[in-house]
Image 1 (tube, rainbow, N blue to C red):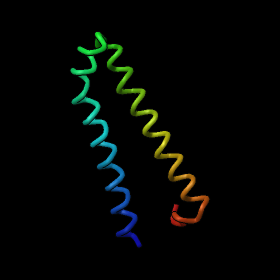
Image 2: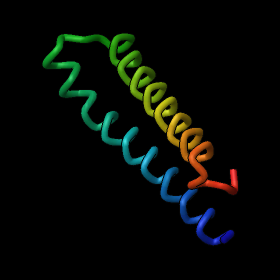
Image 3: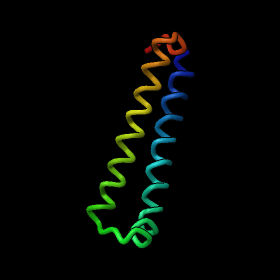
Image 4: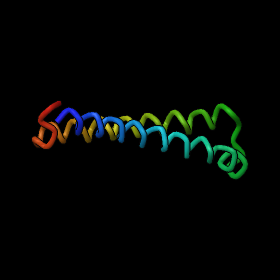
Length: 72
């Protein structure tokens, strides 16, 4: 059971890092296409990270209530 929990947590962290990396790689293109400066691009990264974190927390909370994740 502990191995499954550890694997799930590692997979979740990997996906978060991958998503943030993809957004950071896309920033130069976003900046040139939208004519955005650095503070506006920072808001893009912050907004994406906040929405991603909210969705992850909502998913864990709903999994806990539904009984899928009884270990939380």
